[in-house]
Amino acid sequence: MSSVALLVLLVAVVGIALVALVVGLLVSGRRKPAPLPDTHSDVLTTPPADPEAPTELSAPPVTIEPEVEEPPTAPELERPEGTASRLVRLRQRLAGSQGSLGRGLLALLSRDRLDEDTWESIEDTLLTADIGVAPTQELVERLRTRLRVEGEGDPRTVLREELVALVDPDLDRRLQVSGEDGTPGVVLVVGVNGAGKTTTVGKIARILVAEERSVVLGAADTFRAAAVEQLATWGERVGVDVVRGEEGADPASVAFRAVQSGAERGVDTVLVDTAGRLQNKQGLMDELGKVKRVIEKQAPVTEVLLVLDATTGQNGLIQARVFSEAVAVTGIVLTKLDGSAKGGIVVQVQRELGVPVKLVGLGEGPDDLAPFDAGAFVDALLG
Image (cartoon, rainbow, N blue to C red):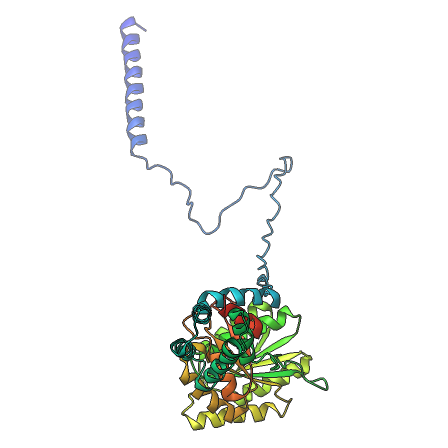
């Protein structure tokens, strides 16, 4: 073969190869890409586990402990004040509020000459102190005799002795808080609205607790929800149970259940708070008598305490008479005696009812209620 023919054959082969290459590139460019695997398929194919691969340790399950609520802490009980310190405060409070009466009388009696004008001034001073007409006349006559006729020298000593006699130290002022034959003592507390009756019940409970007596309170003032809640608060503070009823319930029924509860528990004393009565409402006074009668189906009422606001003066005496007729009052509690009250009301109310003042309220504090002591009262008057 000639060299010319060989050259032509080589060019032809190269040309064919180039054409084939171009055609192959065009075809591959038109092909569609392979579809990606469907990651949203409902069934995923999991490759078989490699038996030689190390086992992955799973974390232990976490146990969640349920929250346990701690029981509520019982309120710390208060320790009421004893009788001795109450009497000390009685002297201090009364000396501050009532001392002007004693000082005025001593100034008059210490004059060089006790003439008629002086005795009239003494009488006026006693009357303005709410001692009352009859007791005032008796006291002035006794002072005249001892200081002017008999010539006894120390006006202060004479005045103290006569005032103590006027207040009557021989009256039995003990609270009858004990029952007989295993029954509790039952103390019925009565009085008009606003005199401090419910507060007095709570304060008496504190006195009894201080004497280590067991007590149950009866919230028979069912017409005032606030009175029931107030009494419950007093009871909680010293650990005393309170028997209560629904608002508007029969007071006699609540009082009956309170005494029944006290008898079943074997407590020493049951204190029953009653609704505040208006002395001119005969129906309400009759209901108060019913409360007492119902209570006595369980146990005798050992004490009926009438709470009087010492600042009411003559109106307090009217209240005292009406209550005494309804429930046979056995003792008086004079509240607010440390304020603007006139100390002579002690003498008047005892003369009016023939029953002693047994407790006096000296302020707003929880232990500002003290047993009445004639000597301490007069000493406070005289400063």
